[in-house]
Image 1: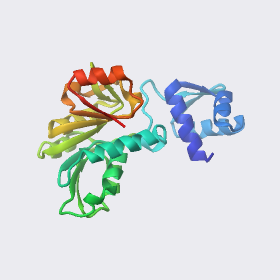
Image 2 (image 1 turned 45 degrees about the vertical axis):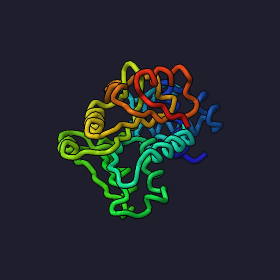
Image 3 (image 1 turned 180 degrees about the vertical axis):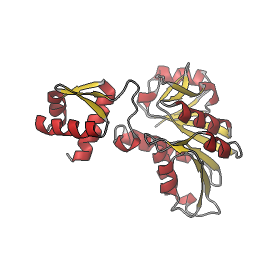
Image 4 (image 1 turned 120 degrees about the vertical axis):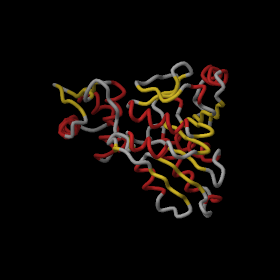
Length: 259
């Protein structure tokens, strides 16, 4: 396992559990305790975790794993979800994409669609995510609209009044939301309130709203609400979603596509 892969795995385990012991991490990743101690020390230097005697804990009370450290957890599910979301987009439409690992996969799926290989434009993509804009900007058939704003290092998303200014002047056919939590009662949510505010505005400027989220994010809530479940037209998730969750979303008026 490479160092980057180890770091990714360690940070995801840490976010999931809150605390990690050296011996425990070494056993799970099948490396030596000395390697884990060195990894913990180097990650602590980057302020990605707090070193403790015999292990590490998450950095801060409210912790969000930066996008560059998010790995292939649920990768196959996200790719299936992304393709299903991309299939819901018609040529020539204006599509809003928020930041996140799943929406990044949606952008890639859109770029691979043969029927979007040409056009003037084949698609208009509005995004506040720097990484998504960077990936799609090389596609001359796509018109890329990037909001202004201040970049969040955790998600590469632009937030703040400059982003508000752009979004308030345009309309979109569809907004695709990447979320950290989606619940019938509490709605769609993000970790950061500024990020949630931009995502909310993107929803308001779109004719229809799609939430792209793997089943691990369903039935959960997070700090900053984006919108109510009733504001979402379609949820695209993976086949591991349970029937009761599907029923609750359907009763709330959300169409559910499980892939």
